[in-house]
Image: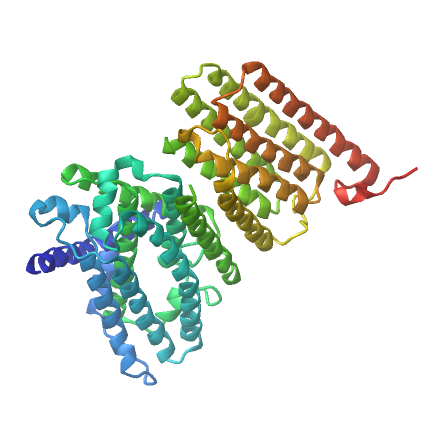
Length: 310
Length: 213
């Protein structure tokens, strides 16, 4: 048990340290693709440092929920990070690999709990934008969850477990045979959901504060200073974790530095993909989001079909 | 042998997308993607089964269905259509749900069909049957003349895939006959669309339900 805690702590620290870098990378790429100079890759770290030194303005209409929410969000995200096995940690400490707790359902619902905290905080200040942001966030979440569970179910059934470490082991043993038709459909469904859950372009635009369209930014509009830093960090961590899960159920990573390097390379490539999507596609209207989620659900259903009817 | 199944599944996704699609030019792009995937299936079959004339079939598929036909379709589009937005019979959401329901039924029905398909190719059986039915669904739910042909070509893609799956490639002369059929139907489509445009000032097939003496 101690072993698992230590591995978990390392994974969480890695996510804390690396998540802003991933965000900076995606932002930098996007700027380059749009012909802008753009901020440097390290800007998210500077932002966090800047926020943490500033004072904080808290509306007199808020309750304790407003102050507790950022802490709750970051805590749930860090615990989720502790659950998720990482090829990088496995490469650094081969002795500890396989010791991650890695419960996939717990992981998903810890992230859902963080989202719940944030939605409450958005409502707490009583501003209309916050309420709108919260309601939209829950709307997207309610649509994304069944699709996510359905797609994950296919992978969990084939691995025979809900444990991410064990799923990773199954993927490793299967090698590229893991890529069957049903799994491909599940990966595609998960890709749509990763985009939705990270609040990226077809669903939400992470760069604007435009009143009528914002989801995530609407909820955190009232935050400033250290609380904002906590929230931003948690959100970037969530992005890192989701991309991690997606890659790990898809690609058979072995152990060792070669695979850790491959993992980083693929992560960077996924960043390129996200930046491309953000540069070439417009955000869809909020009432079109159910269609995207419906498409994802459809892919999940087809994945289950292809798995069971042979 | 999962690769061929994966490519087939992507083709199935393209066919589902076609049913809910609302734009004429995207339908042609969709058909091109389907043809490209079909070429891939033929190539994989050629490599796996070691049937040499399948390389020729793949080449012909590429030349006719990926290069020549989209060019002909786009040419017809430019001449006869000003508005690329279509008004299908069903809304895209309903059509897509119907398409998925159809695929679900095919997957369940396929268990009771006994076709002499080699075991390695058995994954392609439900996929190609679904593509055939989705082609019919496309023809039913769209009014434009071009979409009738696109639906027909989708059916043809499904049939071709089924033929490849069950026989590892038919005799070359049969394949040549099929390609000739496809090419002729594409040409006729071009002429027919143009003629409809001249007579009715529209390519809506609903205008074709009355005889005029």
